[in-house]
Length: 574
Figure (cartoon, rainbow, N blue to C red):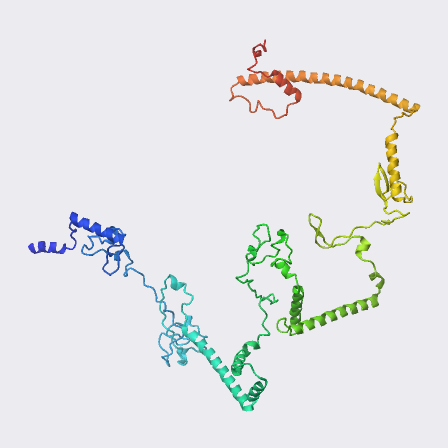
């Protein structure tokens, strides 16, 4: 009994609660923590030799006393525990490919595949061609066993590794293959040089260079350099230029990159209403200086369209299109490889095309006739209209197209007769037309020049001063006098009818007003009766009318309406 009591405290030594710290020890501990936080004292180290951040709270860094009070502060219990972590496959682990080649089996084994004789699968899982007589019965041509595959357990990165299972030996095989090809090329080149040296061609070339004075210091090295590029240049003719492949099945695009020293297109004019800049294609088709009044020829950049349709760009595009079409037809031409040949071929094609058109036209005219229909005036003369598009600015200047010609009259214009220097109708005064050169109002008269102009002006002055306009009343005929009397009688009759009509209208209005007053009285009585009835028993919409009131009803309402501020309102019912 005593031994058990003695053993009990010994077993509970490790689980005893730590002793309480004195005030001095507590103060020293706090000062040390403050110095560690300020960086003046070294940080505390855990059992693994790692520094503990002094800003981590004590309840996180210290181990609970009831677990192990003898342990110093640590963060190991906050980190993932090794025994609890899930173990994944290594990065180099992968399924083994192929079959086991080290062991060769010559006899059928019990439990193996009846078709091929392999021990790693059964007959229903066999991927080999079904034999007429299986290996179980023949005992020959036993297939080797497959590798026993491991069970892979990949982590997140391993499942998404695109090089997972890649064998680096595959790349070494490719490197070895290319090195063998390079060695074969060098061997062939050395053999060719030996043959040329033996035949004397190489010596002849060297003597000719020395005779004419060769500027190159090392002709053999240049020859080697050219021979190395022979294989690459051999197939260069069949390759299309970048961005010039016309085949719709395979297109090659080139980014429109600019030199870094050039000014960006969108910085040439910062006005937001200027030309539009497409950031995707880096194109600015319109002129950015169009609103500034500058001429496109004077500015450094006038838009992509200006460059596209200026100079020999259109001709170059037509030549390139001809090269594509000729290549499709079987002609071996290329714009960059042999431009001279392509230009001559294009010119001859144009001449032959024009000759063919003329021959075709002549043969059709000889066969069917109709030459007279071709020798007709243009459509502009026949129809007096055209399909030409002309665009004008708000000031009248032509922006696009040609300016339309002024339509001329069928009469003769600007014809001067009888010594006149101005046409008839060039002078206007007092409602009459005349000649401006002599101020004459007589058509087809002879021109008197300056003298006639002074004479006409003096005559007009005399007429304006001396002749006074007099209002003479012409005598009226009997018919006119009779018509005036009839008009006066009609006017009087109309006045009488208007007076009688106005009297009748006034009487009708009074009658309408009287009826409206009676109706208003009846309505007020009905409203008074309805207001005395309980609103729950009152009929629905009993005080509401949809019809628009007439003018007489509105006048009756105004007359019958009671005004509380009227001092005589109390005498209305009396």
